[in-house]
Image (cartoon, rainbow, N blue to C red; front, side, top):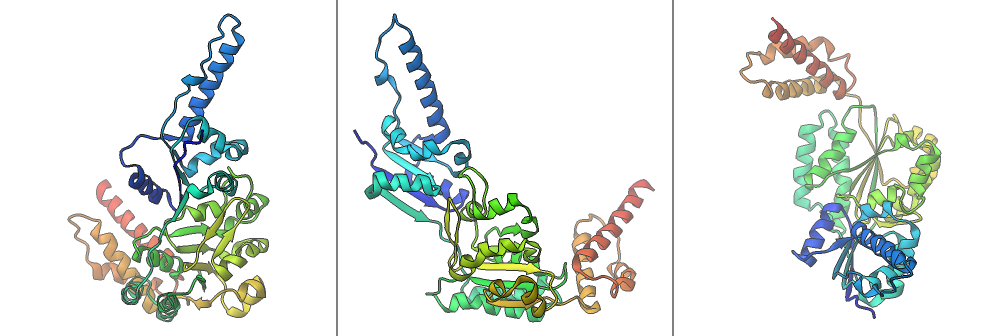
Length: 377
């Protein structure tokens, strides 16, 4: 007899799912899928032993344990085969489950649950934070303080994001290509945007997407294999960074057409909703003409904006070095360093350094050397 009362599906991050389970089960005990399979296997072996023993014909089918609550975590899918996902109804009825809570089910599992228990399924999708107009004013100020020498780029970036706050009915994500030399603030800008919402940036390095293994990662494989769609459905933020977009195999770009157009990313196992998200792609291109030529018109035209981050001039580099020195001095207890003297030592490098990353390495190397001298003198 069917005992199941409710099936709750949660679409979102691991942290969100943990809170979802607490909300619906409280302190009530539950089994996870791994525990269920362990009990099932042990029970099956016992049945086999009893049936093989001709001297003992005792029927022990009534001895199978039952429990009210089953929770299936997304991490558990990698440990099961498709047969279990296809026959999930059998396990629900065998163990007389009353409440089933499922995290990010692959299409196969969800379709079979809906086929058998359509009327009993409730779905909740994680809600991600969004910027208000007031938030954008603070974001603009924070970006200007942290990403030096890129005033025009920052203004365009925040203005583009404003589209989402202005049009509350918009579903399409904002998709922007940040281009320019390495180490001038593109990735840092994305980190600050996510952090301003109090969320962890979702970041993928597309330079990895070169061989057949990563093509499978993009377009999906077996339900237990890692995929971009699976990672996206578990994301903790609606701010997405596709780093080094220009270094991905051109075949990979077609995977993003629907995402950039509609905010939907789909593979064999998952259909992910990324509407009203902020998608930032970075590249080392130097002009929009080069971008159009190298990436091609289909992907070029899908960007809502192409924002240039310029090489840092000596004035910006001086401010960056001064900021890094301040950060390093705060780490040193009872320091007797004179900031002005240290800064003057880096004057010759202002026109030679090309990005903030190199400046940070140079300043840190200086302090490491000085501190090492002190402890060994």
